[in-house]
Every structure is written in C-alpha cells, then in structure tokens.
Length: 203
Image 1 (spheres, one colour):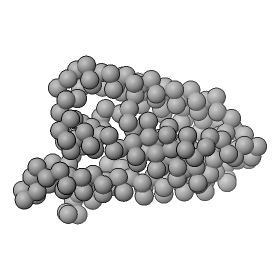
Image 2 (cartoon, helix red, strand yellow; image 1 turned 135 degrees about the vertical axis):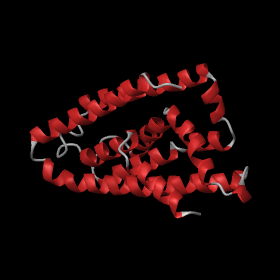
Image 3 (cartoon, helix red, strand yellow; image 1 turned 90 degrees about the horizontal axis):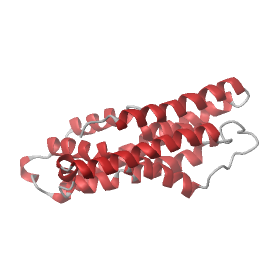
C-alpha cells in the first residue's frame, strides 16, 4: 500500500460533493448521531460502484449510452428531490422544536441512494483503482477489493468528522433564523446545482 493512494483518496474524499453536503446538512439540522447515520449511508452507497468496477461492470457504463443515461437521470431526479426536501423540511428551520426528524435508518438510506445513483462513481473507480495496483496484483479481485475498502473507511471517517463539525456549529446558529434560512438555501441550491451538472455530464 502506497502513501500516494491514501493521500489521493483523502483529497478526493475531502472535496465537497453530494455526500459531504448531505452529511453536513444532517449534522446542522439534527445533530451528531444522525450525521453519523448519514455518513454510514453515504459510505455504503459506494459499494455498488466499487463492486461494478472490480468486476469490470463499470466498463458497461462507459460503453453503453443507455445504461449510463438511465443511472444518470435517476441520480438527477434524486438530487432535485433532496433539494426540494431541504427547502420544505422543518427540521433545519425548527431545530429546537424537532430534533428527531427522520429515523436513523431513513437518514442512512437517503445517503446510500445519493451515492448509488451517481454514475460517475463507477467511472471514477474504474479509472482510479488500477493506477495503484502493483504488477504483482494485476487482475487481483481481492487486492482491488482491499483498495476499495480502504477508500470506504476513509470516506466514513472524513464524513463523520464533517458531521461532528456541523453538529458543533449547530449550537451557534439555532438562535439565528437568518443564518438557518441562508443555510437551507445554500444546501438546496448545492443539490440543485449538482443535479444540473449531472444532467449535462458526458458519458
């Protein structure tokens, strides 16, 4: 295992994407424990893309326009749904009155779907993992699974830290309706922007 793989993975994970936005939004709205559920869900959402890449199925998405478009537009629809949900969700607007919100399971499922319905993940793993496979392990499903597992572990740790930071900041914003409204618009806008970007993504 090279330090380059861990460093590159960490940089990729730290970059704000749908998973980070979702975990931070949950942490701000409902606290640390729900954000852990969100982080866990987002991490499990990586599994299909990793498995597809390891088994060579990601190549199908790369060559099949129909397969790519189906997954892409399902992802677009779900991102817009998340944007709408944040706008109408009372959890982030009335934090003191409702700190429970969705169940941990539902929170995790939403996080999982966000990553499952992201076709770029399968293409990312297809291009990313092979670069760090030594010649001695070329074609080794076990070694590729090991790399993917490390990536998922790092994802969970980083997302939990994001959630912890967000839940800590939550204590300082619950008394400021203006900040809460601004945050709702930012998160909803972020999901909407990601949905638009995915709409025009090339195969």
